[in-house]
Image 1 (cartoon, rainbow, N blue to C red):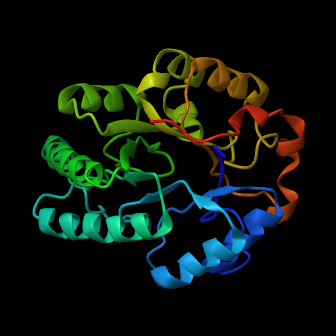
Image 2 (spheres, helix red, strand yellow):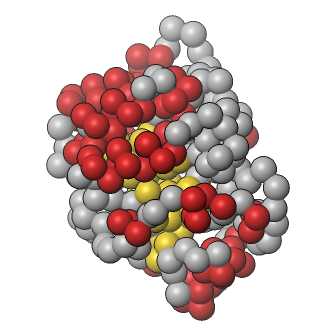
Length: 267
């Protein structure tokens, strides 16, 4: 199924390997994981098989990014570390059956060096796209808002479109996060209408707050209808922070008809 549940942000009440089955109990057939690398691959494989769920996406390891550092993909001088991260990611992606891998650009913490970092990121991104292509795995990259993550190199839709045009790689598309782009662009409907063919993965959370649909101001009835009508055929993933217990955050599954997300993704 093309509807996915992000088990890095949802079901955090239990260890990562237990979240596969928690997602299954909530009715999901597919999950995504930001960084699965803290748990041995064999453990995750067993948990996935027991829960009988698919894995849509994982991220390439991002170094110290989530601890406030610059990360890996855009940092000059860390190209070899990035290549090692891609290799580790491919091992996990193949082992878990992930169809999509996302590359996080990271931050630049030095004023005036942003262009150098961006050039490094673009070279690394092209490398990752080519490596993943050899294994039949789609490569994506995303823009993240600079309020939640100050200094993030790629932070709006136009930047992603410019990078896609410059690299012109057949195995590269953008990951479009509705929450992040509502903050930075404010017109997610236009992007979904006009650029669906350049999107390889969609994630959603409400705004403000990054909670489940219905906790903020976004019109998800309209948003889901736009995705449906756009011709987009990839995964649509719930990547929100539940405002209460995870298992109590799924009223939106009953509020919207998402039966059109049945079936295999197409890339």
